[in-house]
Amino acid sequence: MLDEYVTLPRPHRFDLLMGSLGLACGLLLWSFGLYTTGDCLLDQRWAPLVPLAATAGAEVVRRTLPRTALAVATAAIVADQFTHGNLVTILMFTDVVYAAVVYGNPASARRIPYSTGLVTVAVTAGFLLWWQNAIALVVGVLTGMVSSCPP
Image (cartoon, rainbow, N blue to C red):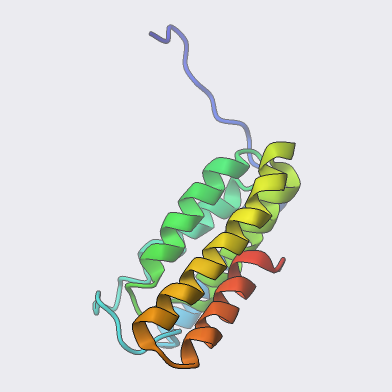
């Protein structure tokens, strides 16, 4: 049992700026109706704002809590695939992955590139089996770019 309050580390000033600007730019794109996909499972207009807000929050703690930020951003990018999507959510996700490698512990820095490579191969193989055409390779390349390339 905890007898004292648990305090979170204070976020870095630049991370607060990145999260705020990312949220503002994402809201701007959303207000103009600019989305990354046409068909989606959650068709409500507000649905892309939930992953956007979660990724902006992960962006704020990307330096102080890199593994937590990566877990939140990964859940948000998966949820974003079920909405119309927002380009800023994808861009902030790539930055959180980069920050998890740079600011995380050495074990995370070794595991994350291999994990993103395995995810890329699994997504490509899955879409090749499902769609059985060359567009699946494009999806695999885009998955690799989003998960592996630094911003």
